[in-house]
Every structure is written in structure tokens, then in C-alpha cells.
Amino acid sequence: MNRLLQDIAVYYSAKLRQHGATPRGVDWNSEEAQLLRFSQLLRVIPAASRFSINDLGCGYGRLLDYMTASGYRDFRYQGYDLALEMIQTARQQHPDKPESFFMTIADPGEMAVADYTIASGVFNVRLHYSESEWLSYLHQTLEQMSARSVTGFAFNALTCYSDRDCMRDDLYYADPCHLFDYCKRHFARNVALLHDYGLYEFTLLIRKS
Image (cartoon, rainbow, N blue to C red; front, side, top):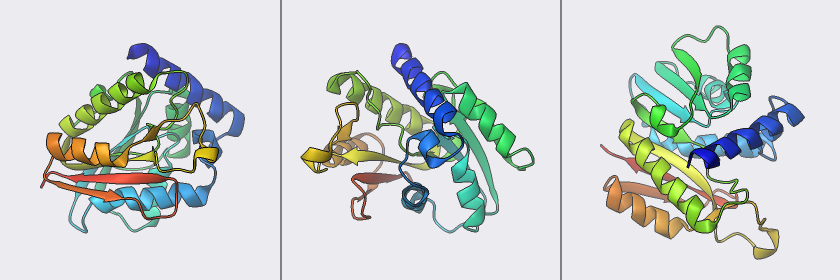
């Protein structure tokens, strides 16, 4: 597991060096798609009072900017990433953000407890690992996200219903039905599967209360 996480950190550090603090720097094709993913993930949070949120795989902190621009005000943001260069860039870009911090972690289990945890794109790049190794990593990460989320958590993944001729060998295409069932059986009774927003992926919202 540690080697897998180290390889992920190396991969994304290289992307950041190549493309800078842009959507391509965190391996997204466009900002439009990146922001659409954020809007789906944040549906796990109802319009309510103060909350705290973990951003797992935060990259250069674009979710924080999106939340601020979208009208979220009374929240504490905690951004985590495996890649030190990502965290350094995030801190440089958000020097005066109150109620927020960015931290490098070696494992998702190092996150602090928050009301919600969001993870966008952290399960997509499989690299050279087998399907079974990657699914084990995915399950373990979901366990860690759940353990550190008081009220709920959300994540996205590429879908196995993608067009076959567009699939890449180094990416992981998850079975949304399997993960819906897994989350329903292991984490909460209230689970929503979103697979209707125009991208070759899906989002799962897990609400504990």
C-alpha cells in the first residue's frame, strides 16, 4: 500500500511540474469538467450552518476557491495530498485563507476528523497496479474516509460503462453498482449514486445522518 501511494505522489508531482496549478496539473482535461465534479460532490452537504470538510487529494486547492465563489462561508477547510509539491503550491496560492490549512500526508488515515470528506479523482490513475490491488486500495481508502467523517462523505470514479474504445490501460474504471452496494452495506443507509451529469464517471454521496 505504501509503495502504491508513493507512486501516486510521484505521478501527480510530475503533472504539476509539467502543467502548473491548472486542471491539467491535477490530470483533469478542463476546468469546466473539474468544477462540474465539485458541484456533484458538494451535494452531500445540505444548506446548513457551520461545518468542517476534508479535501482528500486536494491538489493545489481549487475546491476551496470553488466553495468560496459558490457562496459557502461558515466552514473549516482541511486540504490533504500525498504530493508535497501540491501542498506547497496550495499554500502559496492561499496565503491568507482563514479557517483553512493544507497538509502533506503519507496515508489517508492521517486526516483529522471532520463533518465531511470529499475526494475527487483519487481513484482514477491505476498506473501499473492490477485491478485487484487497486480495488483493495479503493476499499481501504473509503474505510479511512468514513472513519474520519462524522456526517458524510463523497467521492467520484471513472465508470466501467465508459465507451470501450476510449478506455486507457493506466486508468481504473470502477463498477458503480458494486461501490453503491459496498457503501450501503459498510457505511450508511443513505447512499446516492449520481451517474447522469455528462461525464464518463459517477459520484457517490454517503450520508451518515
